[in-house]
Amino acid sequence: MNQILADRLKHLQDSIGQACARAGRSEKSVRLVIVTKTAPPELVKDVIRLGGVELGESRAQRLTQIAAEINTFLSENADQPDIPKAVHWHMIGHLQRNKVKTILKHCRMIQSVDTLRLAEEINTCAYKMGIHTDILLQVNCSGEPQKYGVPVGASLHLAEQIATMPNLRLTGLMTMAPLTKEADRVRACFARAKEVFEDIRAEKIAGAKFKHLSMGMSQDYQIAIEEGATMLRIGSALFA
Ligand SMILES: *Cc1c(COP(=O)(O)O)cnc(C)c1O
Image (tube, rainbow, N blue to C red; front, side, top):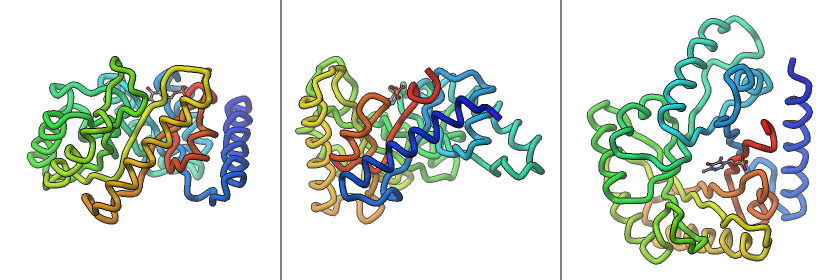
């Protein structure tokens, strides 16, 4: 057992629980996606042994490689009680259209959909594979021009377009806070994302399955919980 990782995970889960309590929210209302992009495969296996099944990667090539390696690991250890039957991979980083095909069969969810063309490519590939893919619309709430994500003002319209694509399931929004230590700016960004999230729900654009608000990383997950995150994406707090 990897005791250091076990301690970090326990500490993180306790801290998430405390933030939920402060915000008057149930712990069950917040899901943790463990971002493994900096972790060597052995550490990814350790975190799976500790119960991590929702895993995130930000680069397509790494996702296909690590997912394949972990699949082998899971099937070779299928008789062990602490090894789950399957894990779920989330694509959380910028995705080029020519990489969609290679990651699709490994992905439970693509969180970084921010253009019509990317959504169309995922829909086409999913159709050819005979599957439906869960996606999140990535919204740029920081206003920083270099960041990926659809601008807030264009997000409802893009959500409407995506909601018509038969092989996509639009299940929520994802956003990233600006790179800053100013908590007020981080909070304003998350609050903005929550507003867009509630607008899309109120307009009934994607129905009841639209329920995930993915925001909050190692540095800012407590603020994200206070502002209504339902999904956190955390890496360095566990693996740094
Ligand atoms: C790396 C990454 C994370 C995790 O960030 P940490 O600071 O390591 O917790 C979350 N979301 C995205 C999109 C990332 O690329």
